[in-house]
Length: 111
Image (tube, rainbow, N blue to C red; front, top):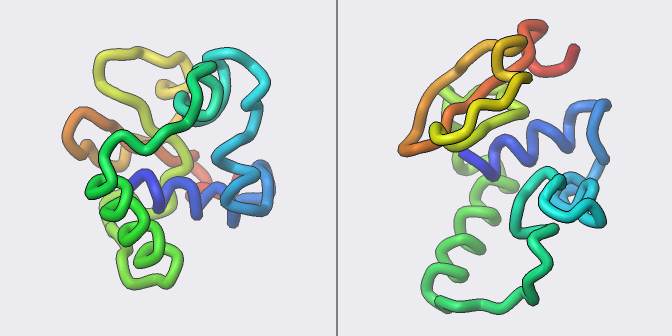
């Protein structure tokens, strides 16, 4: 679902036009970037090769169009249910998967 959000942002003119551009957007802002691992100040290390391989496999499948979650649809935002971002009130809730809640703009994701 997160990979789908990233690709939705790549397709959305309001965001960078590449996967890396989306993932690392605002990475110079400590704990204020799009994806927390990108700006948490910690050195990037693979802690679990098996989990990393699973993430690679999912990324390849999503980018190849082999995985699409209709309930996530054109979501461009998500957050964990233990935070309460102000932007969520202005967007359409799409679905909840685990602890994460997914949203899109009321215009369908591109407005």
